[in-house]
Each structure stands twice: as structure tokens, then as C-alpha cells.
Amino acid sequence: MDNTTIATHFRLLADLMELYGENPFKIKSYANAGRSLKKIEPTLAQLSLKELQEIPGIGKAIAEKIEVLTQTGSLPLLQSYLEKTPPGVVDMMQIKGIGPSKVAQLWQELQIESLGELHYACMENRLTLLKGFGDKTQEKIKNQIEFILQNSNKQLYARVEKVWEGQILPALQKVLGKKANFYPTGDYRSQEIILDQLDILITGESLENIAQKLQATEWAAQIIDNKIQLRIPHFVDIYLETVEESSLEYRRFETTGSPEHLNFVQSNWKGEPSTNSTEGEIYQAANLPVFPPECRHEHTTLFSNPEEQFKNLLQFEDIKGVVHNHTKYSDGNNTVEELAMHCQSLGYEYLVVSDHSKSAFYANGLSVERIFQQQDEIDTVQQKMPDFKIFKSIECDILYDGQLDYEEETLKTFDLVIASVHSQLNMTEEKAMSRIIQAIENPYTNILGHMTGRLLLSRAGYPIDHKKIIDACKANGVIIELNANPHRLDIDWSWIPYCMEKEVLISINPDAHNLKGVGDIRYGVIAARKAGLQKEQCLNTLNANDFIEKIKMMRR
Image (cartoon, rainbow, N blue to C red; front, side):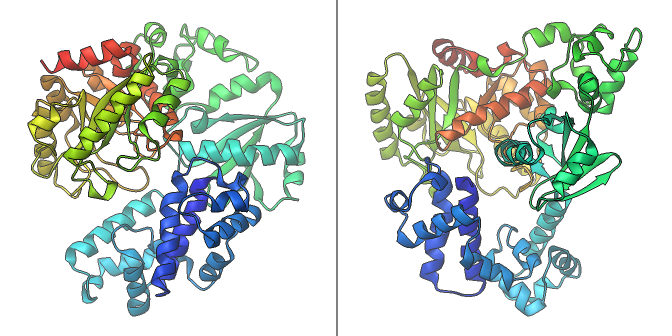
């Protein structure tokens, strides 16, 4: 069990206790655990009770509950609340902005016990009858429910990858034995950002034997259309299909990529390959290079010259610097030195420290005095690491009027400025465009951060005209961030081809808040490859000297 899952248990426990009006001090303790545990670097499940208690902020009671949770997979106190709470009421607590006390009000006063009932109540205008619920609140709740229902039974690729490789695959290997070999295919193999199922090809075992062995497990399995559907709670459905070793690559080709891509390849065949062909032979029959799985989508026209495009297609190894990172100065987990040492150990050449600005009070945003304190510390660390470059930056809030969060004399102290919207996200397109373009036109803005503010499967982005924003970035020498956090991946990759057309550089940034977060760069590279992003069109493929010179040159 990973730290994020453990933290989620405590956060849910705090919410349920608040739902029932329990002791506020205990609620606060569990809520704090829910916020802090996911940020801790050591894997909690591997620590002893004594080691858990030595972690700052974790007392004896929390440590004991972590130990029970990691050993049994369950938290008895949480389970007791879940048993007496309708599942739909628990679902209602994922709606942002209403909180457990308002959920209790909906449950107790209107007898609403599911998202469906709540949506119907909004349609019937019933929420406005309750104290503290107005027209705007009702409309926000209605829109959020529609967003949640639309994305139900979907998972982020990053989570599916983690659960499949870390939990389900090892368990299946144990159940099915050494003869079975597993080959992911479908949308998982093409690394789609959001998945609604996981397709696995298996060699070495018959479908009947697999089904029989799975009957002895707790998983719900059934045969549908010559595949085994495996249903696992809180995860996408898994479809297991058996295939002969000799036809494995042909079947992987058939099941990877969009229908448009398959039609494109097949329409170019000069004679149909046999079912024993390798993927190389299949593409060769169409006089095409092998398309990377992540490029086998419906936008086949992006690859008009695939031979040349794939030669220079961005690779993870091309990234030389880690841009947009948070430290303990704002809401990060690590010091400047810890972050720099970690990035250097991973083979990167430079780090851009970009903590939150002063208006982000919820994230411990930096006052002017603390900016200078951090910059002094960066200088000190830089002296210790002469072969690694640390750049002074800020993730500067774009205020509601489009201004940046500091005066000119402060902004000019940074090597570069990342400008992002973090507050008052409920905007019309007209307001969002005015706000963002004014920030782009600010002479101190170098990179536009997470363009739409979206959180995948959680929050839709504010409405914008992508083309006008990209055009404004071109006109003002501003780079666009592809925020690589798998919950964001913002700018959406489908707009990167237009950026390339306009010669607007992309910077693939992890928005890291801890050491592990640096690894999210990989998800940004995957998204960028879908768009066909070329190495030279990505800012942080440049070495440290060229990186900063490029930024300076673009704003002259």
C-alpha cells in the first residue's frame, strides 16, 4: 500500500467523522494526516511502529493506525463509519466546495443518498430551499455531478500503470504460474492519458485454464466473447485474451491504436502480411516505419513524413533540465539542496526552483523577504554544486485583473518567471482570455503555466481560445508549459501541433512537490510524443547555458 492510498484513508475518515459531527480535535488530527502522509518520502508500509512515530507530525495513535492499515488493508474505525453510511453519501463528498457538513445537511434534511438523487434535486431546484445553498452553489454542484458521472469508471494512465505493475500483475503471475506471459495492449500500450479498460494478451495458457485458476481468487471473473473480464473494485475492468506466441505481434498490432491508424496502415499494404508477421514486417508491407504505440492515434495526418519525424521525436533521455519545482519554502517537501542533489543524481544538468508567489497563501506563498532568503540559499547551494546549475524562478500567480503577483523590482530578480492561474477559476471565456493574455504580455512572463487549470477526471479547465493564446505567446516570446503532472497534462497534447506550427516552444515541467514528483516528466514526454513534438521544439532539451540564453533572447 503506497503513501497516497494511506493518506486517502485518513482523509476519508476525517470527512466521515465531520459528517457525523464528531470531536473536532480528532477530525483535525486525521485531516492533517490525510494532507501530510502522501508527501512523506519513505514508504510508510515498510517502516516499523517506532520508525513511524519518529516522523514529525505522526503521533502514537496515527502510527498505530498506519501499522494496522498496512498489515491488514483495513482501518477498523473507518470501516465502522463506512458500514453505517450509504455509499452514495460517501460519493457525494467528492464534490468540491460543499464539504461534509453540507453533505450531512443534504442527507438529513432532503434524504438525498446518491449522486443521482442529488443531481435530480438540482434539476428540481430543491437545494435553494436549504440554508446556505443559493442558485450559484446549486449550479456548481449540478455541473460537478455531471462531470463526475461522465468520467465514472475511468482512470488516469499513471494510476493504472502503478496498480497494474505493482499489484495486479504480480498477483496474476502468482495465480497463473510461470507458463503464462503477459503483454499489455490496447489503450494501455498506446499510453492514452485516460483509460476505461485494460487489455492484456497472454501466451502459454489456455483461456479455460486461466478461468479455472481465477475461480479460486476473490476477483470477479467471467468469459465474454472469448476474453476473460476481470472486475476489480475501484479500478478499470481488465480483459484477458489468450494468443499463440507465433501470432502475438500481429495481434498486438491489431489491438493497439485507433481504427483510423489501423485503416491507414492497412490501406498502404502492398500485399497483406501473414498473422505470423512481426510489427516491423507489418509496417514494412505498408512502406512505413514502425509507429511508436503512443503515436497510433486517430490524428494520422500529424505524421505526414513519419521517417523524418520519428528520427527527431522527443525522447525522455533528451530532457536535460527539471523546470518548475516547489521546495519547503512554499508547499514542497524538500529543501533546495535535497532537490538539486536528487536531480543531479538522475543525470539532469539543471534545476529551476519555482515556488508559489505571495497570493497563494494556501500554499505558503513567498513574501518578498522570503524570496531574497531563498535566493541567498540557492547561491549557497550553487557554490557546493559547481557542476550543476540552479535557476531562481517563481510560479507567479496571475491575479484576477491579469497582473502578476509582484512589483517589477521583485520580478527582475528572477532568472525566469512562470505565470499561472490558481484562484477564481470560475471564469467566462472572455474573462479567462483577458486575464491570461494580459499576463502573457507582461514583459517578465517567460513561461505560461498549466494553461487551462484542468485536473483530469476531477475538474474541467476554464474555457479558453487555445489558438489566440498560442498566437499571443508567439507574439510575446513566451514558452508554453506542458505540465507533466499526470493529473494535469496541461496544455493538452492535441494543441501542441499548433504550437509547433507557430514555432512556440514547449517546456515539459513536472511541477514537482517532492523528489518522486520529478519523475512525472516521463508522463509529459509521453503526451508530447503523441503530438509528434520534435526534440528541438522542447525548451528543456537545451543545456543550461543555452536554456537561459534562449529565454532571455525570446523576451528581447
